Image 1 (cartoon, rainbow, N blue to C red):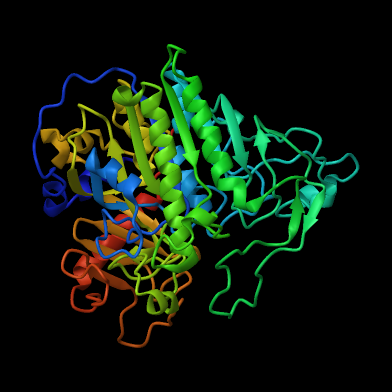
Image 2 (cartoon, helix red, strand yellow):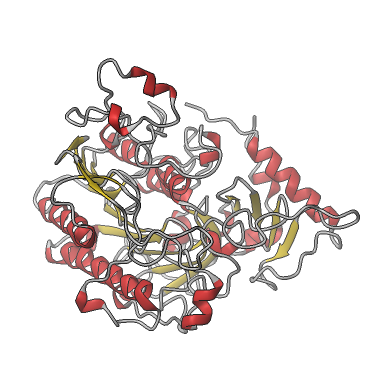
Length: 507
């Protein structure tokens, strides 16, 4: 089917997104290094350069913003971990895969299809060395013990049936990464272990009873130093995972200094997702409790990576991209307790279809190419990494295999053609509720949050709205539903969403 995006852009979308100041960048190097730093569950309102009223100071991320560009209207493609990461690496919305909603667990099978293009494999083709360090959460095909093949019929294998002495199949090294050092899933999901190049560094033959586990109705469920019971490798220390992975990223950067090849590092931090385990020197660093202190520590780890780039003499020719995989886990009771709005002015939180679930900070720095201290208001998605990397390295601005990705390089560089960037994006909640954004307007295919916030779902009433329609320019907190007043606009957006759903991936 023909791609409908160019035809359904509105005039307002075409006019958005010009940088606040124009500049003339120097001729760009053909193959800059690319470092993608992805935080985990960091809120738009946590970063002080996005929210001056934040109860948390983030000086290293703020410095990155001062030296580069802030995208003010950027979104993850989903409001939870796995599908968002799938979109980042493949340029394809995850609901086109077998995972229609929710996330994988630590033993879930590989989600990225064999042969599917990724940002890493694309850059490999362009001569890059590539690495994935940190949280993976895209599934691994664990080796199964002989005689236990029946476990393959389950949604995920029973850990008792896994042969941990053998490498996993279909891990990062299968999908374009020359080197990988990963945590299988979130830091609160077993198995608690590391894998280097698809092989375990230590067998997870110990067991943890979990920590801070309470009933799901408790206001502090899945907060604080929370992790689930399960298998754990000897010597695995929850409090050291964030600094340990950061050091792995720093070491990798230092090793690239004299290789003569450009590199792509995908550094997926495990923080500030639970467990919130701020080191002693960061405890009390914020006014937002243990979460805020862990955000402060996360910011400091970003600073270590940025310092490694500079100290290795790679700063001038390295693009640094910083973002978050989705919105924060931050309930209203926590806002009341601390006076901190983790999602800023936006409604909802992680898992929700409302913007608090998927509007994320997005910052890019490239000295002498990206204007320092600039901002862009284009509506964009993290799925755009693949196409942007393609255009950045001399390829086309659209890649057939990355059907939901388009290059935002013009906006990065402040080029006059920034206004032609398509700005229609699709959102998905944890429970599979869809939303679509085109220009100022957002349509949600249903009532409720579709995630963690209440009401999760609402049954439409006779004569009442069947969905949600918001003007994000005049009502960014999504309080006034225009569905009944503007049925024509709602219908047009619904039609656009249906058209996008029907697109197919071209290999």
